[in-house]
Length: 127
Ligand code: HEC
Image (cartoon, rainbow, N blue to C red; front, side, top):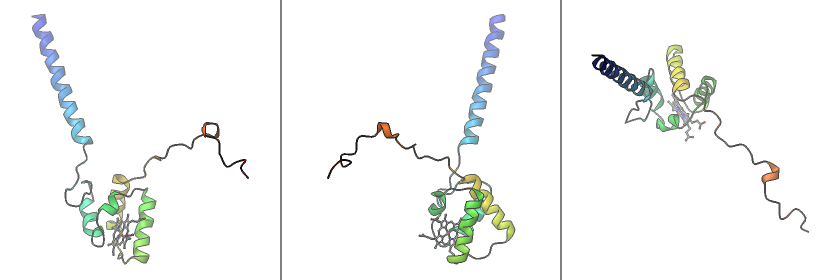
């Protein structure tokens, strides 16, 4: 009897953890629109409609930045490239989407090599 109970609860634990696993996978996998390549989340349709008239959405997805950085890119396109005035609501939706889906990346450059690990400069004493 005890072993039956034990195996039942083991199944329960297994089923629950399988469920949790599925849930976490579903929430972390970011769906990508196969046509534009944009991440599908709130605001992506507005971005696709507003931002792919002049250039591909890849110009967007290969870039990243904070909300301020995205805002300055929008202003630059408005001032110099013919992007029209957007309503405040539309601009907010677009900036929220861009900042949360293509946000500032953590710096990915490696640190410089310390001087003592560098090879000697062969030209240093030449002349
Ligand atoms: C009226 C035309 C037009 C529209 C609409 C437009 N852009 Fe652009 N955008 C440009 C041009 C032109 C460039 C420069 C392309 C190049 O350098 O080849 C550019 C460049 C960019 C770049 C690259 C900037 C850089 O620093 O290299 C990004 C990012 C970008 N656009 C995002 C967007 C977003 C987001 C939207 C929607 C809000 C948008 N664009 C709508 C014309 C437009």
